[in-house]
Structure formats: structure tokens, C-alpha cells
Length: 243
Image (cartoon, rainbow, N blue to C red; front, top):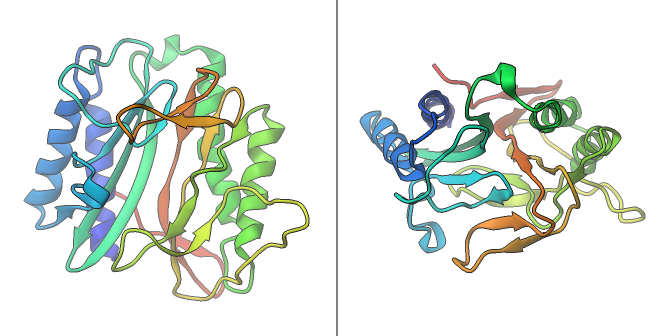
């Protein structure tokens, strides 16, 4: 799993480095496939529930599960979410990040805050990712960070355990519903993916006509940040770190 996670992280990092105005999401997807396969792994997403691409690439108000296309051209000022999975020797690694297309110095402060909040909420969440804590402790920390910054957390799509299957139980919500408890207790050597999806506007989302792409209902921007995490007796370890 460590190897799968490193490959996924490397593919994500290098794809982010080639985001420039005029590049298509299909080109990014092709780069990701080449990177993963050149290291003896396979893209986890290709064919998963009939998904037709190697990575999910979602732009602006697209939250997750965007299908890469030749005619989807990235423009200056776009925010691009790339979600990558790699399968190596029967195990998966899964990670995502949000990239800005253009000079960061010219980024709108609210867009910068949105992207930074999605990332920060992940790190706030995994402070609670330790054996003996509960899944809801992670979700509570993520939700508090997101909402205290004036944003909303997506409910319909959540994190998950990772292993021989890309998505395994238990589910890892990024919020806590009052009165429903905090769920399963975390144990050492569990491996989970924590992946806050943060909307600048309302939390409501909808699925596009292509049956995959998830968008914000109100057209607001959305940011996504994810890593595969190993639970330890004291704390956790992020596995999706690029070589």
C-alpha cells in the first residue's frame, strides 16, 4: 500500500505541475496514466463502475468525478481538482488536490482562502485520526474548520477505508449529524482516505447529465483535498507522499 500510495501521489503532483492555460483535462489524464503505468501500477479509477478515464478532473463548480475531455480546456483563473488512484500489487492508494491555473499572486483572495481551507480542514481532521478515537472525531474537526471559515462541507460524498478495494468500509464522513453519535472506533493499522469537499456557497450538489460529474447546485466554486492515511496507536501517517 505504501508503494501504491507513493505512485498515486507522484502522479497527482506531476499532473498539477503541467496545469497551464490551454491544456485539456484529457492531456492531464493521459499524463497520469503514463506516470502510473510506467511505475508498474494501474490507474484505480479506469473502469471503476464503468468510469471512462484514468483520473477524475473537475473544474471550478465541479466538485468531484469530472470526466477528462479533449474539449475541456483549462483557462487562466480556473481551479482544477485532480483525484488520482493507483493500484500496485493488489492494493490501492488514493489522493486529490486543488490547483490554481495561473500566477498565484493574481489569485482572488476568496479563492485562495477556499483552497487553503479545504487543505487545512484535512489536517485538522487527521489530528483526530488515532487508534481509540472515533470516525466522527475526524468529521467534527473537518466540519468545524470549514464552517468557521464561512464555507460548507459536502454531505453526499465522503471518505472511506482503502485496501484491496478502492472503497472499503467504514465510511469516513466529514461532518457530524447531531444526535447520531460518532460512529466506529479507529484501530491501529486501519487505512482510510480523508477527503473534504468544500463549497464556497451552499453544501448542496447535483450530478451532471454525464451521470458522473458532481457540481454545486448554486454554481459556487468547490475545492477538494485528500490523502490516504495509516492509523497508528498514537496519531497517523500520511501514505500518499510523492517520492
